[in-house]
Image (tube, rainbow, N blue to C red; front, side):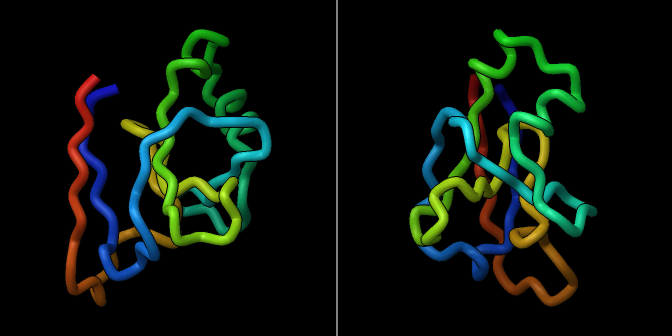
Length: 97
């Protein structure tokens, strides 16, 4: 999937890594307080099995919970990484499909 992700660089703890999603992965989509399992997030958006297999997630290697996803490429980022008025540095990631 093509697109651009922009996150608050100071909220990233390690390297950002593109990966495929696995069962147990979760995210706090923008605007949402609680976390949501990616399998449920995909279901809510009517992803087909093929779409789910093609989905690319971005992980922060510095997190202790390896199932916490920073972003679903081309779709959303995690609430904890969003850009706010207090953001000093923005990390822009360009994805090419």
